[in-house]
Length: 428
Ligand SMILES: [Zn+2]
Image 1 (cartoon, rainbow, N blue to C red):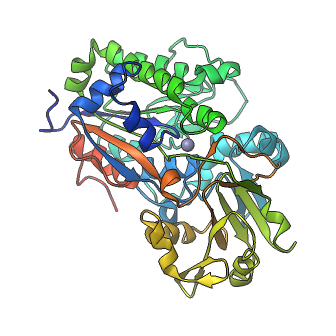
Image 2: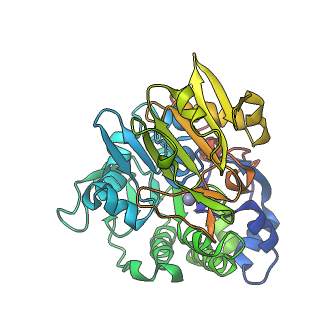
């Protein structure tokens, strides 16, 4: 049995896009023996992620322990006021092309961590390594640390600063693990197979004190098939978590050595009602950045911008700051109580609006609806996420030997630091 007593090493497993209900219904099924065994010995709850509930925002919140008001990553796509241009982290391949392929790749791989992530936020890796521990990250988009890493493809992008052990889609590898990356077969889980190869290498060598093990392929499957259509993908996740156990000599040995937290970055909900092209509903003076189920409007008059969406279908809330107070608008009515319909709605909307990179108006989609991205892409008939709604915002949160499972994803960092014996080590 894992024990909660005393500092130990720790692993955070992040399964992109896994909804709490999918996880709960699958536990006990023979197709996911490792996840079932972990659930049997761990403590479980549903937790709330940040807003917008989109991957780069949510992963950054997990790693920094903060909402976007602190870490400054606002959305998948946003308007850079200082540089007067769109930043696109990859809403879709077409959107990347529309924003400029080379610049989008650079923004996603380098800029997000070296320029956009606030210097006043601190990552899990930075805190752990400042305390003399070794941190490791696999494939997660929030990786900022103190060790310089050159790309494996010379000249593709510049060097980046990550944790001491750093594996990023085979583009950065702190150590030569010899695993090929087959991105052409993503639907079959090829990216997570790369992650598993790096995870196996690290656990076999006991090569870290804290590891963030990020598995991205399930989100891809859920966008295509919807959140209820991911059982095969969840079987792959089980196998890739099982790889860590095999590398340790078995699940009991893995849990003797490491405290473990498993969660997702956000949920997903079905897109069954319709797609909205928000740019058609606001004046040309406003800048619209939208993707999945969240959008941002940049303009001088937030109240008028929010009002311009009053009759538009698919909008749950359009919110803005007025004299420092959050205004929540729904179909022409303004009432901050609208935010209480969603988990931690006020806290999350306010933190999102107080991000200096956020739009002047933040828009959360109604259930079943999605906003098309720069290139008009969407996931109609499949799954999506990004809104304040519970389905997009609630995540499974399992702790095995790391104490009580945290209620919010922004508390995961402190949970891991406490397991490492660094509960009071973080600088404010
Ligand atoms: Zn995600």
